[in-house]
Amino acid sequence: MEYTKLSEMLRDVYDPGTEEMRIPGSGLRIRNSRFISDYSSEDFLNENDSSISENMSFTYPVFIPENNKTDRMILLLHGLNERSWIKYLTWAYSLTILTGSHVILFPISFHMNRSPESWKDPRAMTGLLRERNRKRCDNSLTSFANIAISERLTEDPRRFLNSGYQTVRDLEELIVQIRDGKHAFIPATGKVNLFAYSIGAFLAEIIMMADQQSLFRNSKLFMFCGGSVFSNMKGA
Image 1 (cartoon, one colour):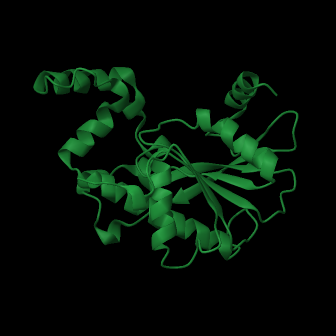
Image 2: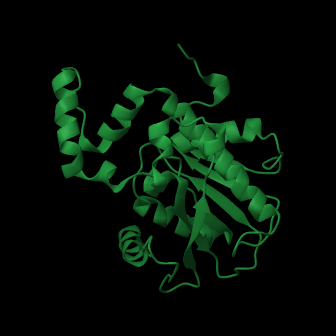
């Protein structure tokens, strides 16, 4: 199917509030699975962030291949400051069709549906945008799309690290759940491959190198527009 038509079709099919959706013209399905992230006992999130319920309890979509008994699995990691899965639906669809794998679209902490709806609402962000531009004359290119993350990181730069840390912990919990056969519908498997884009590629490198539980020792990683690999980074 031509890309634009496929994108429009998947946009119409996908509903984050529906448990299961069938994709017309294929044997594929999309299922939303619930995840609870609770690291309040570790006290690494600041008090305001710990109260954002969307970040602690959320759903993530899984593309299920026609052969739903297969143990092939791909974890798809998205880019920085993303608030919608729409552009990734065609990616997940193609990966499922071409590889016969379950494809998990897992949201990074405080991204996608792990953030309040107001963060992507132009009207809700307009006042904050005006106030930031008034205080910072050099930020004329700031827009409602990045004002939430800009303000949050200005207030506490550690949020960048904390978001990544929480996401890694969440992913470890998810992979263990799948490995041990405790996931609601994904077959048990000890191998997961990663398809990572933008900041997701940076995160995937960290996951592959740290991997204290050896959850990714047999994994393959494909990075798309992820910048330099660690060995070639020239930090300040």
